[in-house]
Image (cartoon, rainbow, N blue to C red; front, side, top):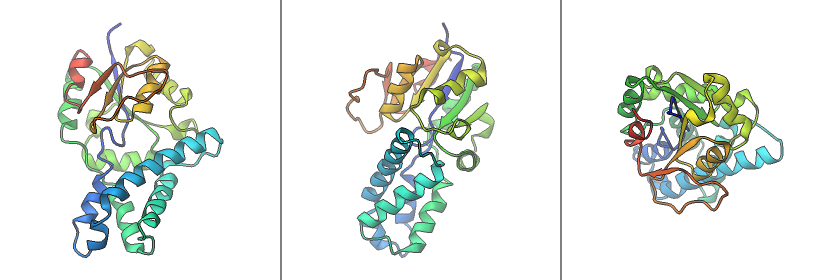
Length: 228
């Protein structure tokens, strides 16, 4: 069955989650932060994800903005920078304006030119996703932006992946699901989507029951995979 619908995770897949910390580190007066920013960015992302999983399995859902703040607070405290309220505010502000990876606009244009459906399916809250999409100028290249807030649980719960078929009326076999998170690609593969894992950091494949169908280093190959 041909691919009709291309679904993308947002954070780390279309949007560079390290951009907020990298930009802040380059600003005047941030020398203390600049010495720590790579580790803070890494821990911020890790804690953000860990909190989504823990909240999902304990049935204590909150929106992604809360876990984003919680993850940042843990990461700043781990580096002894939690007393810098101005830094915290700046990092959170920048998270609403994350940069898209350089290849994203052209990749999405190629999919749309081929007549394929395109959408985001993300743990992000609707307002966060709206801010990121507008900041990156991707609104005209996406048919829908789907948030887990509509179902009240984070990925990889199967009810989240159900949102794609409910939205587009397509079979699972018609969907190419793209994520930079190995666990998300595995979850989507187990669900029945064709999956592409964007493994920018050359990490090992996660030891999970399902594996991604394709492993890429960036998003430039997605139109070819989708048959565009």
